Amino acid sequence: MTTNTAANIKARLMVGMEIHVELATRSKMWTSAPNVAHPDYFDAEPNTLLDPVVIGMPGTLPVMNKEAVEMSMRVGLALGCEIARKCKWDRKSYYYPDLPKNYQISQYDQPLVGEGTIELPLTDDPNGPTKTIRILRAHLEEDAGKLAHEAPGGRAIDHSIVDLNRAGTPLLEIVTEPDFASADEAVRFGQVLRDICRHLGVSEGIMQKGHMRFEPNINVIIEKDGQTYKTPIVEIKNLNSFRAVHGAITHEYDRQIEEWLSTGVVMGKRAKSTRGWDDVNMVTVMQRQKEDADEYRYFPDPDLVDLIVDQDWHDRVAKSIPELPLVKLRRYRGEFGLSEKDANALVDEPATTSFYEAALALGMDPKRAATMLLNYGLKRANESSCRIDQLGITPEQLKDIDALQAGDKIGSSAADTLFGLCCDSDEAAEKLANDNGLVQVSDTGALEGFVDEVLANERNAKIVADIEGGKDAAVGALIGQIMKLSKGQANPKMIREIIIKKVRG
Image (cartoon, rainbow, N blue to C red; front, side):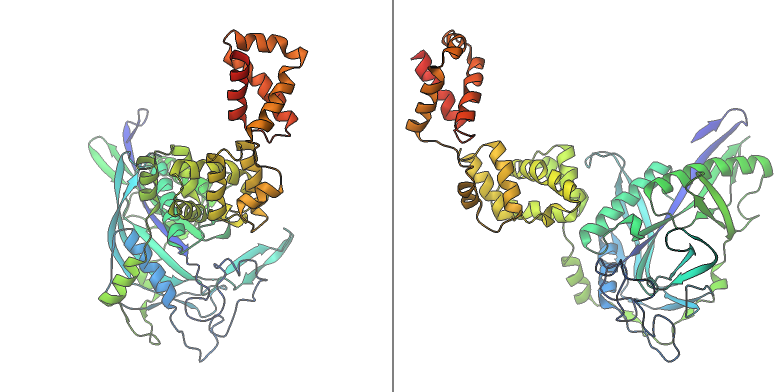
């Protein structure tokens, strides 16, 4: 609640979210045509992922994508929602150039996913305070195509270009109750939902590719002179970044207060409207008055039978749900004692999480595995613009590097080098270490020879005297010289012990 002293009002923001998630099935919702939301097909040439069903040819019949239904069920169960035992498919009719059939197969009054709740963390600490967010429903439908208003390369044109590659993509629309009281809460929910969807494997969740689109429904509760007023609800369409979600909600809150102060218009006197987001000027822009449901002429799709989810199917899908990101974060920080930074880095990318878990399954210490994976792997992944699991190294090789280091066969610098070699080879880590001269010399006779040579150097007399006098820090200077003599292969721990023994007797 904020107070505007000049206007003598108090105002409270209310936001509900509609989130559209493109499901990463290989084929589209109602046909075997390739799905642009799948990573194999995103870069397809415009209007190449089509077939007679997608373009609405007469006589074509839809066939349901079972995988899309199961993905939707997994999302619903992860959000604590009820899964309908019976639901139906409806036609949502409207004309638009990127919708060849002139209707969208959707779900109106009997969605696949019903009510539920999720505890939203309000801070970066997974064990910190939470807020209950109510999920109203999630319905499965098909996406429309896309309209481009400029030519490839940014060239201005006087018409629109239709690309139907996205038409027919399975689309799960998740609708919340208006439980968000700030732009920060709405963004955090979007981030949590994105992480859940990625870890469930239902979407890559890449915002720039349109895998998730957010549509906040915003209004403001205003108190003045003992009276309460509600501004008309505004829906902001097709936001594809968290920056846009935050900016649109923040701007719309201020804009609605200003409009109410100017016009006094409240909910009921004006229909719900939709606005777009101008990312350059950071303002919302009026688009149209919102249609009521009856304007879409919803009716049951005559080509499709009801969808029945029996207990057996429900249970099989429920068992396929992995440990969710927030649960992993709590376990990594609590059970493993990882730092917040390291835990977040491991959970941020599902493939990295899987690699880490595979290393732990081989018996690696959780902290050692995290340190090596993030210190040695993350920098290489960033340099190569790929994921850690795509570098080429295997969890088995990582475990072997750790074993070599723990056994004093290689040092930390050599471990980093060996990690890089493993990225380019299927050979065992120990063989690569031997073949590339990374194994430390631990033979006492060889090490004593290096030590004797350094101690005999007159230029080291002052350092030797300091060591004799009890200055252990001085040993480091001699170790550095010996490492140079041995081309980095001498075991520094053993060198230190030999130096002190020889100098102090």
